[in-house]
Length: 255
Image (tube, rainbow, N blue to C red; front, side):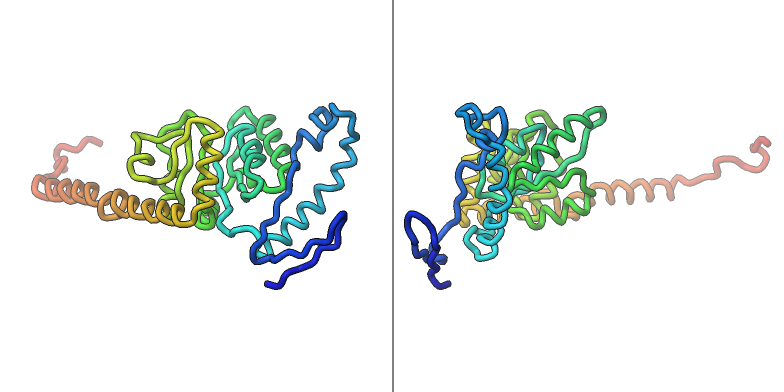
């Protein structure tokens, strides 16, 4: 990739794209929207909205040139406003948010959808089918679960079988920490750090991915899961065949 010269002020830099990264700073709602810090300083923040489109365009061009690592992609199961907050803390990552509205929470859902649209690195998919989400897991580098109250999410299994580590507040029975299937965190700051650590270290991410696949092969292989059921069915069938007898003769039946 040849160096390029950028016509700009106050200098005209020459950049080696093979060793460059593209960084956008201060694209925050607090600076761009009414009622935020920028407005509090007396700025007319309505003028800044014109910068959003060009920033998105140049970001897409940077990705096309390979300036951003392909590994910076997240699939997130996110609740309330946490998706937007996390995306704001990870401007270098592509965050994909999946989930439908809960009964009676249509207003909250619509608020999340609108706010998500304000983040250039956050794609809000809404509710998706099981098969659609599986296809997304296959493309994701990490699964992020920001829920703090949950049982054992099936989403974990869907991710691990595809080699996608999980970063979460919830670790059912310590399975993530014990088997190295991602990272368990206790705060939003720890979650951000864990995500950046895994995405920034391809070797660590690859190792975690391998452990996820190995765990699923060891603990959830078809033979391991189906054998107890098949054995029980076979025993039940054999017992039924040996003890089979008519439930009622023609003389005993009542019409």
